[in-house]
Image 1: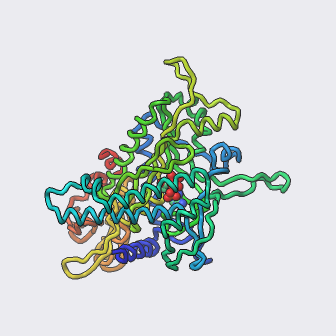
Image 2: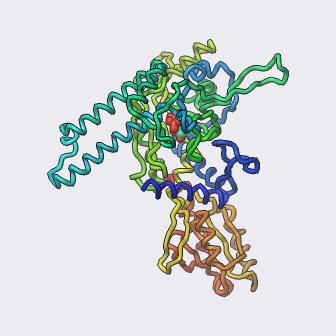
Image 3: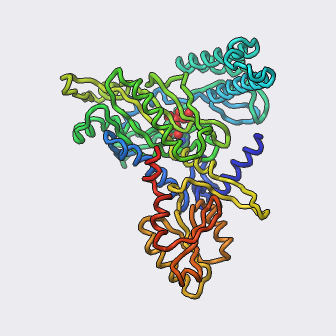
Length: 514
Ligand code: ATP
């Protein structure tokens, strides 16, 4: 199974390159590790995901507004946010394979393996006991399951303690005690665990004496926090309200593998929701549910999403969970929902000496709001959508096709306009149709090659509809519309094409489903 999944992932990656979705960055120089460029189709898909998110947040919630803050921020920002002192990952090297790992990820993987063992025991027992089987009862009484669970709980607790106190020796001991081996060399020959700060730094100012160390932002959230009062006052926002933002973030990730899942330069879509202290848990639950709905409306399959509560809370959070997605390499974090308390605003108050409080005119009192954050990686959304849409299909006639079954509103091109031949006035008629459609729908025009070949190329980039203009079109003003997924063709009056396609391809209609 693992191999099938591995191959699938490899095929998705090469498909993304071959069809202009994603290229390795500066490829002519052999690329740059964990940095990627989006090609002509990738940029369109990415923009559509952004629009879907931005409209959901800011159009459908009249108490959320969007901003676009700079990537560079005053260096004290990152002192106040805790990133200078605490934005570290524990890293460890295997001396034989010379590969570097995140120590916490090694431990989490070991825990996941134990969880799998429990699942297997439950599965086996379910088969044995048949209908009368009670999984919860079995899990709370079976000695083998209880032993695994005890080991899991202990490992979680030890990791939490070690990371919480910054005790890297304890982290190493945990790796040894769990008998973790390097997946490549198969040995347990580990270096000590060391802390590694993930922020990129550079210098601002042209003259050396003036130069000041600054950072490339590792998250977009801080641009929102420092603008909290600017937005609240100028927008006359009343709590609860949110500020949304889409933008680049940079992290010098230790292990930068897995394609665009973990990059050193990536994009986040974040929203900070400011609430009354004490009401944060209500809003935390609210946003957990809302954000999942946003994902589910894409139709990639309910079974591919799950919540994962955090045991090891970040320094700023009092509750946190991930929405995980079933990526080709298994369930991994797609989005984080965090209850960040008043940590950030309080800390910015302290470091800046400026009041960052909200005046509640109803209660006649000032307070620092609590914050619930939703933070989703744009590139991870892209990977989720691309990898689940990618299908290698065997057709009834024995031939094969690769199709991207992208949600139609997100597809790079909504419709391909294909004159059957290059002559007899068909291209002119096709152009006429395209000129009518192009203001509402991104069209792709093509007249080269046999029609079947052209259909396949459109399948490969996920174009949901192809319009074919043939000789009958000239006689009765009808065209055929071919549906990407069913491959069925239907004859439609030209006058009806636009309405039909807009209906199926509009992001606004997708939003209505949430
Ligand atoms: P992970 O545990 O996978 O490193 P994180 O918990 O550090 O992620 P957050 O700080 O919560 O991530 O960031 C919010 C979102 O930003 C994540 O859910 C993810 O979608 C995205 N993200 C974080 N780091 C990266 C990265 N290096 N490359 C691409 N997307 C990322």
